[in-house]
Image (cartoon, rainbow, N blue to C red; front, side, top):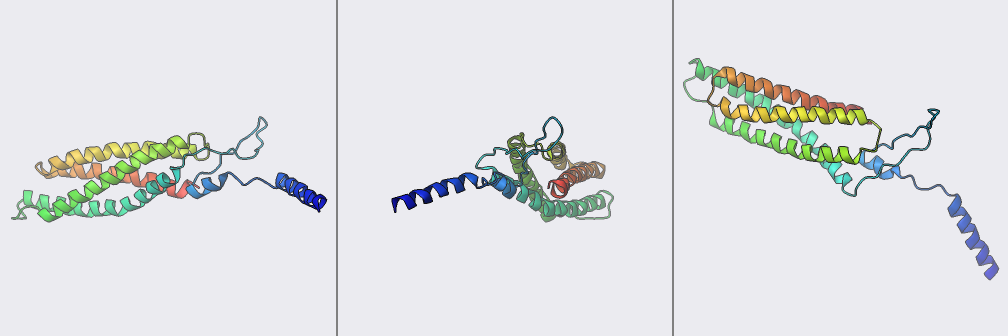
Length: 202
């Protein structure tokens, strides 16, 4: 009996030694990190190199992605309301409208702008954190760096848009149109950067 138990224990040890290890990239696949391929001196690919990430990576990645989705309808709302406000301002300026710009619409435009700024600030915090944690992953590295640079440019554009927006209430329609062009340019850069990641970050 004891001899049989010893044989069973020995077989279990051999089986566990021969069994393949659980792939380390399981978590990476769930949070969107691809293992970086490693090449030897001849250019031949060897087994993937695992990339260490923190325990909080998954929720930061999820929050970053959800924020990028929610900001799209806010962009659309800003464009529609801003265009209507500009048209009303021009009508007032040139005497085609006797009453002032719609205050409710202006407040809604401001509230939506605050929403855009809040989401962009959140993504501007989580984005660099994710980029830093992925610093050892060569997969799509150029894509991630390009995305980060474009988002920094969009950040600067949105700051300028906010500053110009406060003055646009008192300035001429020409100044309001400049405010609108900077806003559209910033939205375009941010949207292109996000779409680039959605499509190519596989």
